[in-house]
Length: 144
Image (cartoon, rainbow, N blue to C red; front, side, top):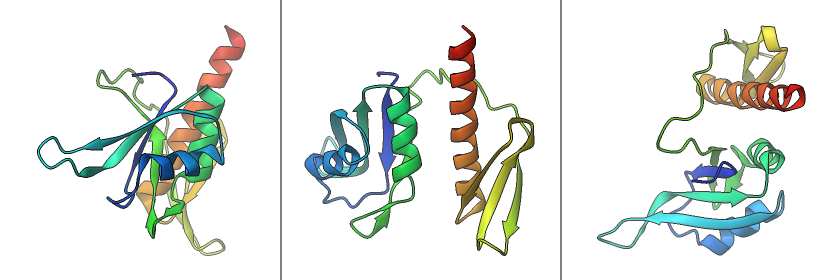
């Protein structure tokens, strides 16, 4: 699987590849869209892989489209991990708190000066991890 691939889930089963392509094309250039279907029934399994051009496009798509609405459902968009688990484990402390001001959970990674909000604690942590990994990757690319 390409390193510039997004994992997309929680979209309606009736969603077509063209509809997903249109949603992602509004944010970045899309190279391919592949909705995973059940082998026996041929029906969508509710998740897909969207390949984009570069790491910046991956980060932009995750930031813009994760938890956005498509067909009345909130999309879940993240970097595809591949089958080998190639991404190293996340080894930073994450603190999650409820924010009355924003009406959302806030996850903070203090050592990286990153915070992210989400409707659930899990969503906030997921966003904080995505932002932290993106920042670590950019820092590594800049120093190497």
